[in-house]
Length: 125
Image (cartoon, rainbow, N blue to C red; front, side, top):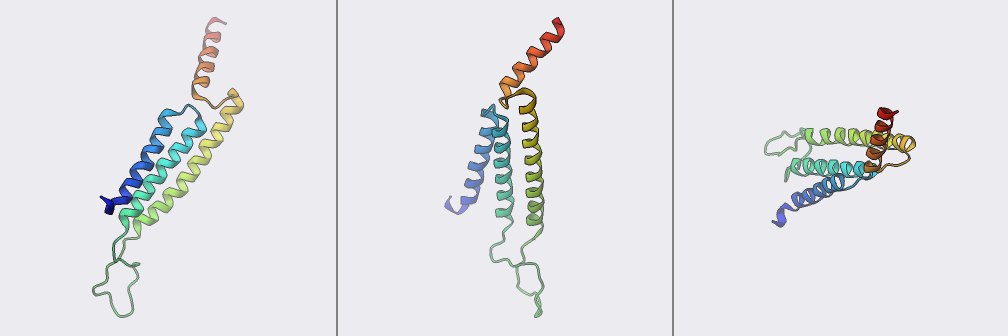
């Protein structure tokens, strides 16, 4: 069990992010929950991609007999995922700012209530 500590860290972070997304009405907190969830997935891929005793995939001058290589592809993909995660978080936070300007709040239940009130006033209007 203790040899698989990385799985436990990933599971705890994943559940923290999921709980934050589900339980909070604040849009900024939801964005942070998604970011925590993304970090847990990235950590998972990086930790399972590590090969014990592996080295960088560079062929030494003396030959490559008996050398174990680590696949760099998962690490490269996770670098891309980090960039995409930062960009989507930035866009989501920008949208939260615009929602705050339009509705005066970032609380999801208040936004829904304001939308329903506006829709009813248009129907009866």
